[in-house]
Length: 244
Image 1: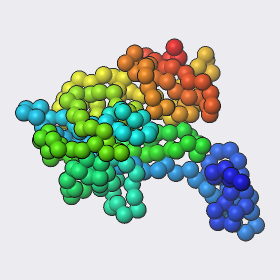
Image 2: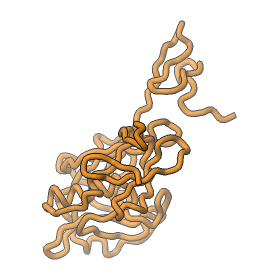
Image 3: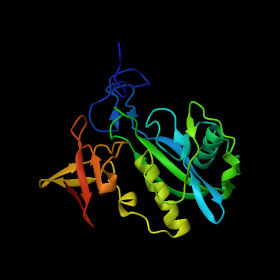
Image 4: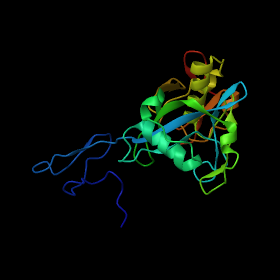
């Protein structure tokens, strides 16, 4: 029998209350445990590269789900053995495309973003982005061999749409902060899960911002307002989101 996630107390096994988090154990006489829905931490590292006078970022092509054949930044889940999110991003980059391990104190903070739905039906994640300011030359990757995780090595020399909206944001933020580039506003201004928007005069909460954003170049963002609902397309109008 399948048990719904976050339905029973992992201390005593009694059912948890339903609805919003934190959920509390119904065994109020002996347990009273509170269950929170905590995002899973992910460390992402922007590895700088050089080619002549150009400085860019490694954006390899994925060879696995989710979003296969799309380009992304280096990173993955923070493990218990990782001493920081920066260390996790560096370790993942080393495992994925063999970038050297460095002292985590050398990595510069860029920012963080949370993604995923508000309820545990799907994964809610917190991504921490850091920058390795010590570049590798593009020739470092000349002998890279494709594997089950990475199909090929690519480099981004300007903001681009990547596999995930959060990665698109981080890449644009890097070029804005570190190379003083003008970047597309829709790359930086993105709808957020949990953000309150107005739809036909009704205040609604964004439940999720899906991975796939095929309308991004048209300045439109697809969002879900409730679990299982049809996507709604939003346009940023300078100071508010408007349904289109």
